[in-house]
Length: 390
Ligand SMILES: Cc1ncc(COP(=O)(O)O)c(C=O)c1O
Image (cartoon, rainbow, N blue to C red):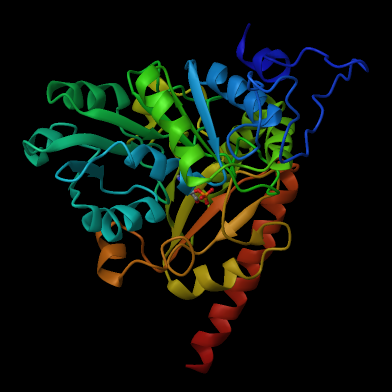
């Protein structure tokens, strides 16, 4: 089965006496046993539920993996991957991974006796410089937040394998429609399914996918023991969203490309970060491992004031955290996604106060560009007026 068909038909044959075409919602905490000495396939919804099982089968097949465990959030999936580490181990972390993942590695792992070092994902050989005899895992992602850096996944995997490291890749920003990291050699893929996979800003969820049976079983055991399971309804909503993933990602990518090109023509925009732009330093590597460039982009103004006024002047783009939904969002990384970092950490990561991030949705792109245009005009006027008063 090809990708777009998998989301709609894997594990979703009409079942039950009513031959329901849409997979039914099993909104139940527990299941009746037929016999006392034979546990049913699903017995209790913290451990398993038919809606979760079908979602897991579909996601595994979309990532070309064999095992998937779904979680109540992306962070719960991240923590499940990190739970493969033991006291005394060390993990290598790419310099611009998701802030929440880094916070967990920095704040919680040391309490469990697990250390970390940072490497530069633009330079895979930096893994060999940062590795220690205790290193066990590499955690990385691409494209990154908020500057849309794209690393060479195959090269990082090759470097990690020289040292026998487990490779954990966060595929949230691309989704399996655009990038399948297990095919590129990664051991474990994690997702915040809150984003593109569900795609409608109505669920918080996560997933852990692998083709390694031992890792897959460890994740299933982890969700059972920690109780970080998604509710049946969240799993149902996620599966419904997933059915249109292939279509949505085409439109997100096409819209983002047009918006990025428009932004490049604006005199007040000093930089546009989008791997779909032919002059992006990441364009070639993105083309070599992705089937599209996704809907995320960011850009900088010459002044902080312009960024702040534009960020609060759009009418279609909503000023909000998160990404990957059908609706376009605008974000101010300094105070939103990267607000928990110190100023020094932000500067190190290139997150400056003149930067805005867009999650470009699937609306008509002409409306999106007109919306930005009116916000730019308003900001130019406001900043001009402020300058006269000053
Ligand atoms: C790349 C990435 N990974 C993981 C997460 C965590 O996901 P969640 O918010 O679903 O816990 C996020 C959230 O923004 C993210 O952007």
